[in-house]
Image (cartoon, rainbow over all chains, first blue to last red; front, side):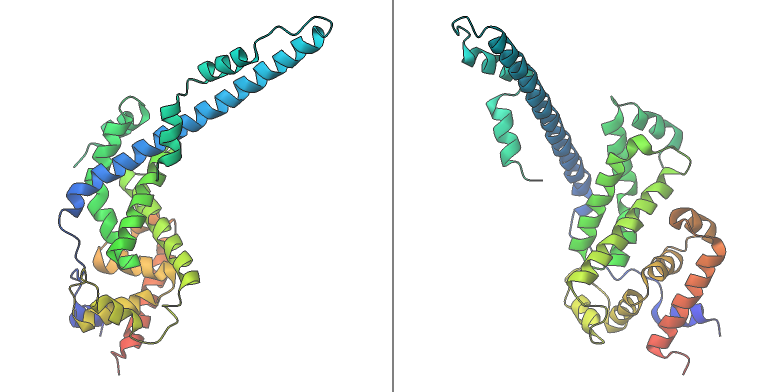
Length: 104
Length: 180
């Protein structure tokens, strides 16, 4: 006797599994939300890296200028450089807070 | 049924990608879910693996070269994800090498399992197969997939698939001692 037929005769090939109600209606929305969260997080990471790089460039530039002007009194406003770096990074506090509190 | 060429064009265009991907999810979620569910058995695990499958597909969209059909590509990801999941689970629990009837009893207690004891035992027999044989058996026995299509999904020759299926059937017969 065909072995596959022996199994088919005894068990059939019906589906014994069930799913929660509305599972397939809700799944696409859940997965698209998860993808959107990933995209947002990726964007924030890219911005953060850009911000760090900008900070490094400005910091290096600041140090170079300071060394070059060692004989003159220090007049540059340090906080201005930090503010500029944050502006260039285009990240506001709300975005940083969202990123830190968001669970995947 | 979606138009494959249109959806591929939309997926390549970043301004239409999200909408096209959502169409893909709607189209293939059920077929992929059932393929995954038969391998991992519980709904919660199947839900996790299905999500991971679509996330992996989304992340790999730039690498999709349209050499295979989208459905074949998605099935391949789903099966690989399911088998990786089972591999990880095997390290954490010892269900497969556990006592006879452990898995079938778990299934009978699962509110999302509707089968009787015989059906639960069949699922246990399938779960005890090596991973590749398990995938081949499910695709052929439940989904009645042709060996040619299965070869594309699993990246295995038709001859090897036929041998895997034959071994899987033989092991299930032995598990139930059907030919005694």
